[in-house]
Amino acid sequence: MTSLLKESSAVKPAKVSTITKVIDMLDNRLTHRSSLYINGRWCAPENGLVLTDVINAADGSVLGHVPSGGVSDIEAAVQAARAAFESWSNLPPSVRADYLMKIQDGVVGRAVALAEIIAQEVGMPLKMASAIQVGLPVTNLGGFVRAIDEVEWEYELGNSSICREAAGVVAAITPWNYPLHQLVGKVGGALAAGCTVVAKPADIAPLSAFILADAIEEAGLPAGVFNLVSGPGRVIGDALSGHADVDLISFTGSTAVGSRIAKTAANNITRVALELGGKSASILLDDADLEKAVKTSVNNCFLNSGQTCSAWTRLVVPRSRQEVVIELAITAAKKLTLGHPMDEGTRLGPLACASQMASVLKMIKAAEGSERLVYGGSAAVAEVPEGGFYVHPTIFADVDNKSPIAQDEVFGPVLVIIPYDSVDEAVAIANDSAYGLAGAVWGADQERAVAVAKRIRTGQVDVNGGRFNPAAPFGGYKKSGYGREFGALGIEEFTELKAIQQ
Ligand code: NAD
Image (cartoon, rainbow, N blue to C red; front, side, top):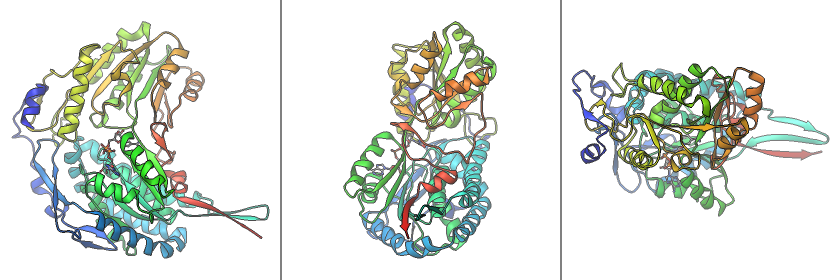
């Protein structure tokens, strides 16, 4: 850890005396977990208790621990979910909505602890973690409650009754960057649809999944409807995706692991929904309000220190305006004070783990050899706590879209500015990516901007800073995966259609 920091020289130890030791104030039971949640009770892993440390991204200290489950725990969890499926799926949707409301109450009641824990597990500044990492899942749970009524559970088509039925046992495998939000997107949609769930959180930032399980237990869900097994992805993830009794795998994470899961699932013809990586473009048209567009794009790119799958990491700008854009981007980036996530003045926290920091610094260093660095870089200095996983926000300009820094997902605070000469070229640049998750278009002529948005091959596009809509489907094209989450479509994702003729 220390050697990584020294090697990067991107950080300089700072005094930490002003930083509240919030973890001392946290309830130890929320951070130090030694039980899995299977079949409605907390139990030790079957093959003995092995604990995995959860690391505080801010300073590398130990924040807590979770048990490392094994294949036999997955077996027990899948069987519990299978046994609970019939009665849960046969409940009226309105009863399942009542349970979801109780879960939402439980999350709201734990919101402060959740925000403090996620801020330190992931590294997002506390205020933002509270609004986004906790506020968003609370909103989305409410969204699922409302969307249950929007789903057409049964309708007539000629002499057929078309019935929408729960898909079955769902394996929900999630990453660490928005740990509660990602899990709620799967668990909320699946439970609303009438599915039962086996959840497997990432090894990094798993604690909020345990707090969600507390809320689910408190809500009184029938035993087996929701199960939680933490542990190494390679072992228990493979066991889940290769399990013949799992009907649908909903995965969010890297493209490499998503591809592996899809291959394993194919052996049993198990359905798979994949939410994967991204390399999204924000296109500034020649009539865009540059100040607003650049500031919003920079903040979007650096949100959660760049660890956001849908981040607009490529800023595609008219060549004649590039130098102005660079100045505006630097001004916006300078406002993102790097520091401890629990410190009030911090606008940008550390990355989530040491390996993520090392990987991001490696990509920055490689790009420094060939690209025009206009801000930050691997040698940039900021006052940050010792031991944390900090990377200085970094901007490259004049970047060729074919270069690795414009094509590869960095998953860190790195923005590339790419110049274009015509709107057709801007669209071609945006679409010249293996990914297709999100994007943005900025222009004074709304109709023209929307027309450009329609040409972008991604699951979401925001025009002129269009507000985030939690009811809108979220998901990708191309290597960003397939399937949609949230809102009514995010419930239908977990259903099958049956036609009954009479
Ligand atoms: P990851 O793919 O390494 O891990 C994701 C989850 O898969 C973890 O729970 C991990 O333990 C598990 N896993 C690992 N190996 C497995 C296997 N063989 N079988 C089954 N499960 C396995 O991803 P990460 O590093 O946690 O997250 C970062 C990646 O996630 C980035 O690429 C990011 O873009 C992507 N992401 C995508 C979205 C989206 O909605 N599209 C959202 C967040 C993150």
